[in-house]
Length: 328
Ligand SMILES: CC(C)(COP(=O)(O)OP(=O)(O)OC[C@H]1O[C@@H](n2cnc3c(N)ncnc32)[C@H](O)[C@@H]1OP(=O)(O)O)[C@@H](O)C(=O)NCCC(=O)NCCS
Image (cartoon, rainbow, N blue to C red; front, side, top):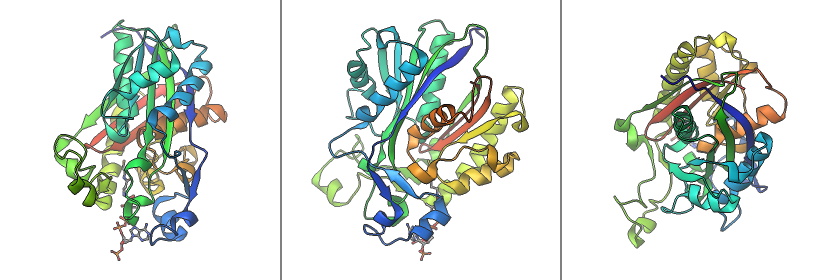
């Protein structure tokens, strides 16, 4: 095992200005503010402008993270983008971002792990750094989920939003930052949360469009049950790997999918809700972007600072899930 330790040097995030409230949604689907709030905790979400893409959100988030880290784009060796909504099937959004940033010497690629995309990318980036392959990496979770939201289906239309979050990671000089990180997958449960068409299984056609297959399709109740169980066990295992307890955490940053999932996970971990970061009320579920946006907001608001110990845990389509313990 390499002794090189990896640190988060700077964070950044960006959400589009356009706000869609629960009241606005009541004009689009048969729903109420009361239903959405009590079942999910969501009050509003951000919507990317027409014709904008994931890289348009990722670029300002990356610029903020680079500024916070005091790095120039030309210093970057690696750009990883966790996303389920890339600008195009190919090339990667990471390559588009490399050009936008002017990160001339960076290698870039995307990573597909749905809502777990940021922690998966963080783990891959940290491994490159630990192996001595690269020094300065930009890790991003960015989504334009509203581009694949079914605006006719009330069960899912109320849940999602757009945004991007970024961190810069470098080898640590004297302290440990990423104390432990674990990734998990279960491909047997793919059918519970997926977008049926648009890939090689069902290429885009008039038929797939007519059948409304280019949208997020989900068995909400099943996803909920699995998310609570697997997020809890993942966080427990990662706390144990980091040799700390839930009581040692200054803040838990769970995937911002649903307030009830966060409350259930916190309860099982015996973490008081005051120690749980929540912004799902303002942004909805932004998939891979949710944890890095939350992390950036926690840092910039002063809720966490130098030396704070953070637990983070995510869950998404695949199924994929992941957890990390990080000292900022
Ligand atoms: C989606 C979710 C909020 C739905 O809550 P739920 O309590 O499971 O609700 P159900 O889907 O069973 O629906 C219950 C009822 O509410 C209705 N309903 C569903 N969406 C509604 C909406 N937006 N407004 C009003 N009523 C709604 C349903 O039609 C159903 O009515 P019925 O019993 O008359 O058929 C919940 O399952 C959930 O959060 N799942 C996890 C989703 C998630 O986080 N996914 C991403 C993970 S990365």
